[in-house]
Image: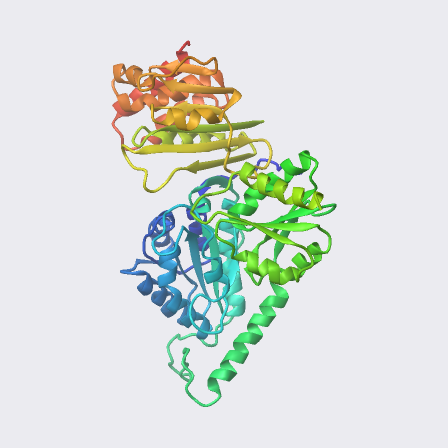
Length: 361
Length: 175
């Protein structure tokens, strides 16, 4: 059960604003963005507060311009970020691929809404594939963090900057409209910004030193392969070091829900209600969507009778769950593909239905 | 404690303002709270609603299905949200704009008329809040009064005065 925390000085913030404040406290030097619902408050927050801190804010003429400005700022060694919502994130994919190819650290925040196309403005988790499988062209990955509360929105933005610099890679915070619009009291990050490592590759002006090149084009024979091998080595290192997940009530558990972000948050209540009804339920919540916490999930799969994946899409993380558990347990799915957020009773019904099928066997 | 509050009405009635205010004033008084607004396409004249959950325990799902308190500001919101009222819940109904059959869980108040008589019909939200707080004293009255006085910065003193009077009229309401 949840422990009662002492009441500490906290501030009430909307998820979108908590991201902005997190970025400022993480030492973000440049923000470039173009408005779109449901993440507008983030751009507005940065418009107001980046200038107060003597940092750079530009409302660009388009999403493409914003991500290209991020590329430029990151190449010059600055901590830079952009944010948008689903249709706008699609527009940024070319730039994200170039950032990955050029090994530039940057933070991209996606406050998801429904798709495909312009979709709708309601919360959704329909960009999982795009975020974790690459998104743009080429053999690359972004590290993808999945917040489930306003506090997470804040903390994970700080962490995103740390990871981006640590691995010289773009990092995405994959939120949704509900998390962006919700307000909760949070404890603000009060430590110094994560340290910036030396950037011996940054374009800082070539006076009295050798010229440097930031590029994603490798035309010499074997050059691209060599470059891709380096990228893959970095991804392997990230996969060994960074997978993160949270498990709740997974001891003595027969049926586990696997869910991320908003769905994981709702599932926390569902498993408690299920336990009250005598169903031994638990929750597996991936915190990093890439790297996916496959080993932890596989270990859990050995202990439960079945898994229920719940997502606000038609079944995307579902595929990574199926890959991770290697047929050790049956995997069921309950999806909400149209921008609707499941209620506690929706999710509890799906879990109960799954459990009944196993009891009937 | 667990108090699940939903405030609903038309855009422009100050629905989100009341919800945000409750959330702000509850910080430091309850360990956990969430505020969630309807957003985006719902603008002035359309429907508007928000949820505030106050709790002594961690709030797992920020989306309540049953409510301990409703503030219903217009007719359109009544059929949509009243089915979610808990059997032991309390609904404050703006009788100026809603016609509803009697229910022992309802507090009927002519909020828009009262606010209009006091000089500003737009302060009806504070009449509703006052009537609710009179029955559910979860936030101290002086905190609300101070919030009104400090939050309408740049507004004419008459606006602050109208909101304060509206709030006090709601507090005194007997139903």
